Amino acid sequence: MLQQTRAQTVIPYYRRFLARFPTVRALARAEEAGVLACWSGLGYYSRARNLQSAAREIVRLGKFPREYDALRALPGVGPYTAAAVASIAFGEPCAAVDGNVLRVMARVTNDAGDIGSTGTRARLQEQAQALLDLRQPGLFNQAMMELGATVCVPRAPLCTQCPVAADCQARMAGTERQLPVKLRKLVARNIEASLVVVERRGKILLWQREAGGRLAGFWELPASEQLAGLQQARTIGSFRHTITNSRFLFTVMTGSVRRAPKGFMWHLLASLPAIPLSTSARKALRVYTGGQ
Ligand code: SF4
Image (cartoon, rainbow, N blue to C red; front, side):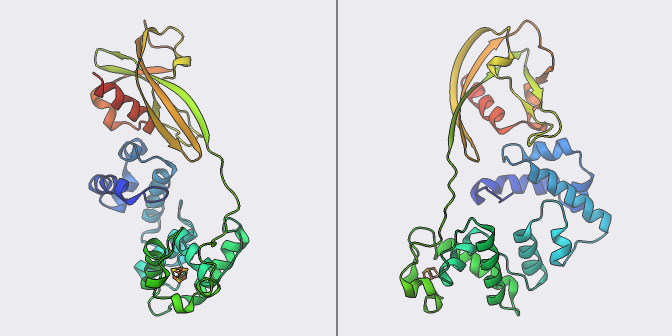
C-alpha cells in the first residue's frame, strides 16, 4: 500500500483491509471485486491484484517464504520488498535499497552517476550490500531508510547531525547538495475531462472497464461524450486528480437520460462502497453528494 502513497493516506485503508482480510487465507479466498472495493480510492490497483495473487501462491506453497529468491518470485514483489521482508522479518543478509537509501548511498560514495539509470542503481545496490551489517541486516536496513527519510533529505541534508558524516565522501568533497544526479524528468500533462452523475430513483449510471487495463473490472461514471442523449445537463463542480505525470481537471456534471445507453448499468447509490469504483468516480460522487 505504501508504494507511491504516503503513510498518512494509507493508515485507514491498511486498518480496514486487515479487518476485512485478517489472514493470508482470508485474502486468498476472497472475491477479487471485494478486494478491489476495499482498495478503492488508493489507486494503483495492480498492487491489490498482486497482493491477492501472492496470498494465493503462499496458500499453495503451504508456508510463507523466508528467503530473498522465494519472496522475489511472489507476484508484485520486487527487489526492494523482497530484501526488506527477508532482512527485517527473517534476518536474511540482503540490502533493501529504496529511493531514500539510493540517495544516501550516492552521497556516502560521492557517486555522480544518473540515479535513474540501471547501471548507477546496480552499482549503489552493490555498495549497500557491501556495507550491510551481517549480524543485524534488518536493523541496518531500517537505519539506512530512516537516515534517508529524516537526515540525508533531498534538498538540504542535515550533515551536522548525521551519524555517518565522518565517512561520507560527498560531505568531504562538498558535493552533498548536488547529489544524487537525476537526468530524466517527466513532463506533466494537463488534461481536462468531464464526468456525469446521472441519478434515477436512488441509482447511478455506471460502466465497467474491460479486462486487460490498469483498472480492469472497475466501475466508472460516464464522460459527457459517452452520453449523446444527455438532457438537463448542468455543471455542479470540479476537482483535480493526478495519475503519475497526468494532471486531470475533471468537471462534474449532472443530467438525465431516457434510458441507460448500451454498456451502462444502474447501481444503487447505497451499494457503491461495496463495488470497485475508480478514484476519479469516487471524487466526482463526493462533489455530487456534497452539492445536494
Ligand atoms: S553527511 Fe550529509 S550527505 Fe553524507 S550521509 Fe550524512 S546527511 Fe547525507
